[in-house]
Image (tube, rainbow over all chains, first blue to last red):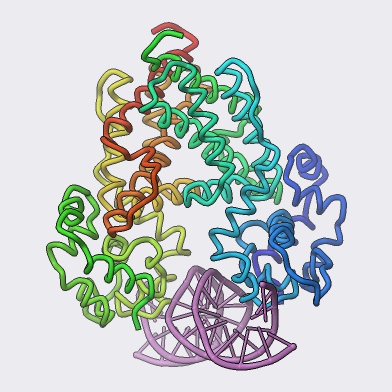
Length: 249
Length: 249
DNA sequence: ACCTGAACACCGTTCAAGT
DNA sequence: ACCTGAACACCGTTCAAGT
C-alpha cells in the first residue's frame, strides 16, 4: 500500500547511526527535521492519512492547494508530489485540482513562488547585491526537500514569477556593473544557472547521505564547507561580470 | 491511437508559413530536418511502425537499444522517450530492456554519452581549452532534440561518463589557470552549469518556434545571435576564473 | 461556480515462466 | 543467456454529469 521508494527510505532512516543523525541536524532539509521532531510522520504516511488533516466538504482554494503541495514536498520529495497524491491529501478527486490550476506545471510554479517567498532585493553595491541574492536564493532552495530541482524546473518552464523578478534584479545589477544591456541578461542568467545547478547538486548529496547512503569517493562540490565553495563560485561570477563591463563605473 | 502531443505538433508543422519553414532550416534540430527531408516520418509514426525497421527475432544488443533511443529522441523528443515506447520500436517486450540496462536513468546516461561522442579535448592555452570545450558541448547538445535537457538530467544523476570526463578536463584547465585544486572543481562545474542551462534554454525556444509557436515579448537569451551571446557568457566565466587564481601563471 | 466519477492513454519496474 | 506475458502500482488530463 506504500510506495517502494518511501519504504526504502523508512528503512534507511530506521537504520541510522548516531553519527549520521548528528549530521542530519546540521542540514536544513525540512523533511529530515520533521522526521526527527515528529517521528510519527512516516508512520502516519503509511496509512496515507491527510498530512494537513484537512476536512472534506470545505471548499478548495488556491493557497490551500499550494500549502498541501509544499507539505507533501517537504515530507516525501518531488517524486511523490503528483496531482493524484495531492488530491488524496486534500480529500478531493484529481479532477478538482484542474479547476484551480491549468496543469501540473502551473501548480509547481506556484509552489516554487511559495518557496522563494522570502527572497527580496537589497539596496547596496552591485557586487553585494548579487552576492546577497545568491545567498538568499540558496537558503530558500535548501529549506525545502528537492527545492532546487523544483525551482529549477519551474524556472526553465517559465512558470515562476519570482524567478523572473530575481532575474530582473540580477540584470539590473549587471547593468549597474557596466555590462551593456544586450549582455546583462546573459550575465544574470549565468548567475542563476550557477546557483540552481550548484544547489541542486549540493541538495541531492545532502539528501542522499541524510538517508544514510555512503556515496563513492568524489565529494566534489560538497566536500568540506559547501557554503565557502558556493561563495567561491559567486565571487568568480562577480569578477567575471566586472571584467566584462564595456564602460567603466 | 497517436499521442495528443504528437498530433498537435503535426498540425503545427502542417500549418507552417514559408517564412517559418525557412527559419526551420537554420536550426540544427534533427527532428525538424528529418521532417523536412522525409515528410513521411510523421505519417509512419501514426502507424507506430518501427522507426528502425528492426526485425523481430534478432538478438538485442546495448548499442542497438541506444541507437533506437537516439532516433526516438530526435524524432519525437524526450517526452516520448519511454521504456515502453522504445521497446515497441525494437519489437521487444518492455521487460527485455531491463536485461541490458538496470533502469531508465542508466539507459538515458548511455544516450547522453552517445550524444557527446564527438566532444574531445584540445591542447591549447587554458582559455582556449575552456572555450573549445564549451563550443563543442553546445554544438553536440543542439544537434539532438532535447539534447541539453537529457544530458543535463544525466549529468545531475551522475549517469554520464563523458560528462565526468569533460568535468575533469575543465578542472584541469582551471588548475592550469592558477585556481587552487580545492576550488578548481567548483570553477569547472560553474562552466558546465552555464553551458547546460544556456543551451537548454536556447534549445527549448528554438524548438518552440520551430513548431511555429510565437513566444511573447522577452526574447532574452536568443534574441539576435545566440552564438555571440553564448560566447559572451563563456568569456565572462573565463575572466572570472582568471581573476580567482591564487598563484600567478 | 465548483466538484465527482469514470474514463483515456499512458508510465517504470518486476518476475515467474519459457526457450 | 535472453526474453515474454502479465501483473503491480502508479501517472496527467479530460469531461459529462451532478450540486
